Amino acid sequence: MYNHSDSKAMEREKRNDTSFSRKRSFTFGAYGGVDNFACGDAARPESSGERILDIMHSPATESKPFLSTSSNQRDTELFEIIEKLQGSRIDEQRCEFPLPLKSQMLTIGGDLPLILPSESGGYWIDPPLERLVGVSPTSSHSGPDPESYDIMERDGEAKIYHEFFRSRYHHTFTAVDLALGPLVLSVCLEEEENKLRVILRMKESSLHGVFSLSLFPNIPSAVELAKMLCDRVSVSRFEVVGHLKAPELITAFDEHRVSPNFKFGVLYQKEGQFTEEDILSNSEESEEFKDFISILGETIQLHGFSGFRGGLDVCHGQTGSEAVYTSFHGREIMFHVATKLPFTEGDPQQLQRKRHIGNDIVALVYQEGQTPFLADVIKSQFLHCFLVVRKIQSEEETEGTAYQVSVTAREDVPPFGPILPNPPIFTDRSLLREFLLTKLINAQISCYKAQRFSRLELRTRSSLLECLQAELSTQSKCMMGDPALSALPSSEGVRGVPEGSGGFIENFKRAIRVRSHSFENLGVPRKTGVSASQRPKTDKDGESDKSPGPMHGLTDSSGPAELKDQTSPQEET
Image (cartoon, rainbow, N blue to C red; front, side, top):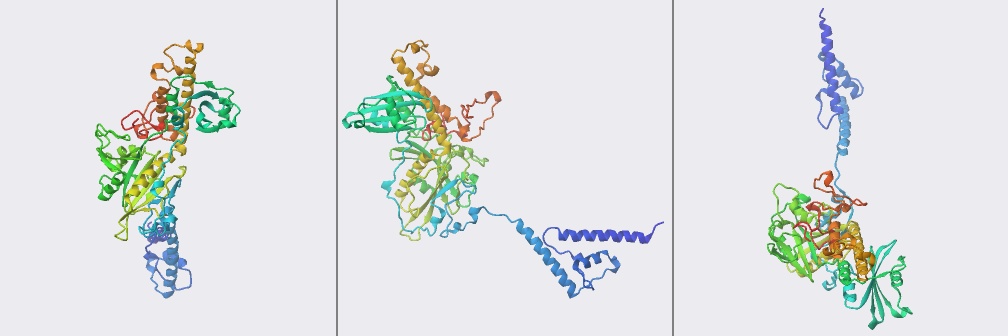
């Protein structure tokens, strides 16, 4: 039999359960709002929570609103507690800006600094941010005279043989040390000055020394001279080099890192551009930017250009129609200006531009606006240093336009000159040009000492020295009629290289080509898809002897010899 009272009780319990659910959704839910269902009053002194539960458990017909001052106060206290709890939850979800963006240095002199440190570290900045306090275009200038802007030499010993030995009678000796590997020693007697000049070539470096003959009762042996330069030499004898082309081969080895050519990237950063994609997507050049690049050099037409091309295409226009080029103290410089390189619609990474600028070692950034440059915004295995320039307007019309300069480099790049003036501001355009070009060249030479490049340079030098020593030794024995070598087939030369291929010179080129392709040593992943049977063999250090994709080859002779590529137009020999 249907019981009406039981039905009403079930409905009342269902309604009470729903009310309690609504109460929980407010207390433990998200932020804000007032649940009107929980607003009520109580006639006896009890907690607000107990009063609300009583109201929820009472029959709907008996539920009456009570609006007393006491209940309103209790409810107000309850909601204040809830708001505090909710407020703490909101604070927990607040995001933190990266440390540099919170720095008070952002408002130095009313302007933002040119460079902000990388959030992950790994870069140094010159001048430090604290030195920029109070900098203005009218600040006093104190800095080196432009005549003291010295260009660094990448290898100070490279030209000594050509300068002091080739024009004089001298001897060369070779040996293989168990610990040091191949050794090539050159000795020159300078009788007019009563001294001996000696060069010892080892895998790590070349050692040069000058000794007075008065130090020796007799002219010392090759072993004694070698040990005077390096006490780690343990060989007991050297072989005399009798090869007629020895001076040519030795000069090629000594000067393989000497190059009068340089290439640098130029990036154009507009106001509000923080990312690599934004910076590389700029195609339009403002008059201010055009005026700045005219300080660096001359805008030339690439088609048919006969000077140093820095890996750009001068025949088919595949790298744009224009570039910026200059000659500076006997050195040729080509600038890879991002806005002049091909722009590809629909490609946010602009690989046609990055394949050149990303393969440079040093880049110059011109800022148009107050947006700082982040040291690691351009992702590249090769870019190690950035020079950043910003135009600032002088407060006095008589002062004219001024340029502020800052430098950042990876932490393993040694400092290099010329030093920045204090404050780092230039009002003279010719002085700015002299400073920037000298600083760019010195930056690249200093970057070669960073771990990524120095390790690869050492491997290349070791390979070339081994080839040189073997060539000199073998050809000398052939000149002396060594019967062991006379039995070899005439088609074979040093290490199985055909004599018609050029001997050491061909090995020299081959070693450079092979080492220029060893980018796994730099941590650059291969991008080309190859089958397992086509994958290059690797040596014991895991380095490949095949070329990587075109995105990862340095492009011309301005870079380290071991990083040059000889395979495609954009990767110029």
